Image: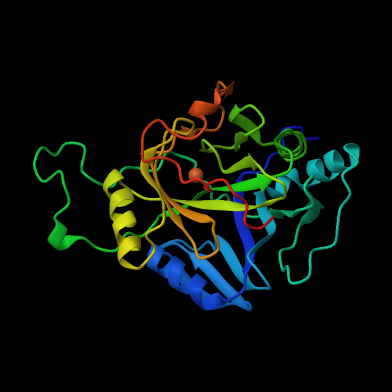
Length: 305
Ligand SMILES: [Fe+2]
């Protein structure tokens, strides 16, 4: 019996939008590889095989389900633990192709535990620019700027009706660990198998939903260049550039066509496997940022609710 069974990755997040064309335009401009497949759009990052997200046509933008990666050796332990916690297994939702253990989160969101290779970072993602030893040429040349291409999905931030209930479910049933929280407003979870400071986070709302997906880039410059890239493509709204307290990453959130966000993230804290992270409850003023522009009034509004 393996009592340490734990989710290791966000394998794929799946949401619907009323029209696929604006989604293709938005994520292509953001620097992702967008492929038409399986009745929707697959979101990929350059040089990686994982399909991080699947965007399906629907009546509105709506988070549909979440597929979380687990190790094969943990399957039996998960089955026993879910039964012991009286968590009912469900049939996959219509249109879902992922094989695995399907359950519902306390909010009612379908969640699949799927045996898959670990795709969350096991080590801290390296800085790509500038080289540590360089003393000249430490700013990119404007004439040579190329499209910002995120390297991998870092995390998703989900709305939840009850941060405490979601925390219990994702830690006690799924094995994730609390990184940090700010009361019952927001909470960040990492994997004990090694992940960024958060691979899933929760913010309080009236319903579940997808607040943002966050994409790792290789330098602080790429956060700013990404903001400029998206502004030039017509996506001027958002928040940042700034720096978070919890997770420490530099950010630029770009508002998508449905009122949620895609985030360029650089230098997020990494929590290696085996680390005992000193989880803390931070005051509300630390929950969002240390510096940056004022927060947009509706930044944490759930347009899916
Ligand atoms: Fe984020």
